[in-house]
Each structure stands twice: as C-alpha cells, then as structure tokens.
Length: 177
Image (cartoon, rainbow, N blue to C red; front, side, top):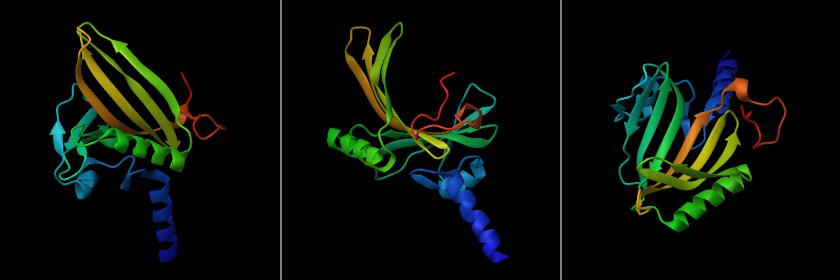
C-alpha cells in the first residue's frame, strides 16, 4: 500500500511540478505556497478572482517573485530579476541553459506604444509539460524615446488544457485563438 501511495505522490509531483519551482505545483493554495515561502506579501489587485502575492528573496539576483492565484489556486509565477545585479552575460547563460534543456523557443518581438511611453523587447517561450516558460526582456521608453526602465522576467504559467493541441511538437502546443 505504501508503494502505491508513494507512486501516486511522485506521479502527481512530476506531472504538476513547475520548472525552477519543483517544490510547488499548479493549483496550490496560498497556504501551501507559504509553507515554502513564508514571507510572501499580499498585493492589491482589481480582480475579485485573481490574487497576487510577492516574495522578495534576499541575497540573490531576483528582485521579486510574484505568485498569481485564480480562485485561490496557483496558475502563474513571474520572477523579476534585479537589473542592477544581472548582466548581459548572465542573461545569455540563462537563455542558453533553457535552450539546451528544452530546445529552441518560440520567439516574438514586443513593440507596444501607449500615450506616454512605449515598450520594446522580446519574448522566448518554451513548453515544459503542462507549463509554459517565457523569458522576457522589456525596455521602457518615455514619450521623448529616452530609456526609462528595463525589466528581465521569467514567466511560468499553467497551460490551459482546452488550448493544447492534441498532437504537436514540443514548442507548438498552444492554439493561437
């Protein structure tokens, strides 16, 4: 009986494990997340269904980790790197490690213009089991086209099973509509 329970537990953990957050699983509640990150802080959101919690790791290159819960279940994590500590070489190494581990990413350009600012950058996405992992670099420019801020993030999200293609290559699992 113990072997069956252990096998079930291992299968569940492997199926729902999140790359780089293997101790967490999709659908965890905030209480379960606090078991691993007891210092998370609630953040205000305008949605009644989505809650956000921030964690500020000390002594790392990460500025903050944001946990997103929909109806009190974990569905997305965003890691925001501290751009004063992360260098171009670090970014290149992370990208190369992800590509080596998960293959070539699906890449896209970010070019958004708003009334007072614009965002330019790129996004590289890998599919890892039930998770998408997006490596995102964004530069923010003011209305005079002066660089005002830069962000480097990794977004981990649960792929909605309804949007997965039945048979596809590793990085072509999400339907476009």
